[in-house]
Image 1: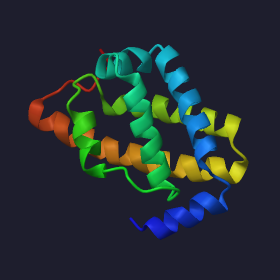
Image 2: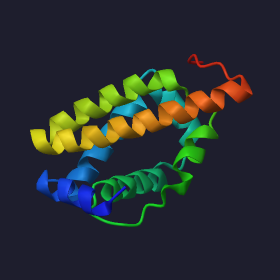
Image 3: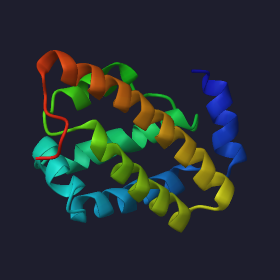
Image 4: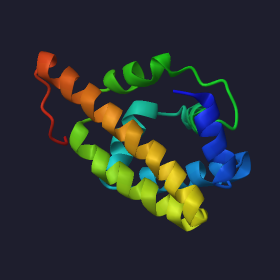
Amino acid sequence: MSAGLFEYRGTAAGLNEPLIRKVILSFYEKVRRDPLLGPIFEEAIGDKWDPHIERIILFWLTATGLQRGYDGRNFMPAHLRHSSIHPNQLPRWLELFRQTAAEHCAPEAARALIDIAQRMAQTLQIGLTREAKPRGRDQGTS
């Protein structure tokens, strides 16, 4: 992934750190209240919400090219270690993210963030599906 490409997209789309912070904070407020996703995130994150949010903001700042610093090597393992995370939860995650981006961003900025979120969801879909087969994990929600 070329930082230059995303940097151009981030700044060209009108994205900046305060806006990304606002979107992520609002998104995770929705996630925490969501009947499907809330319990999953609470189980996975527990009382470590502040550091989680900061790590996620750094991810988005890096993905949009506004900053550097997120180490993506831990992205997939961080999601695979939680047996409560399943591929069929990703559409709801994306739905909430799309809503949040549309609420807080101009259309071009929302499109840029949603594009990144969709790519991230596709990556997770592949990783979670592959991981479920060897372990025989049930892919339904619990």
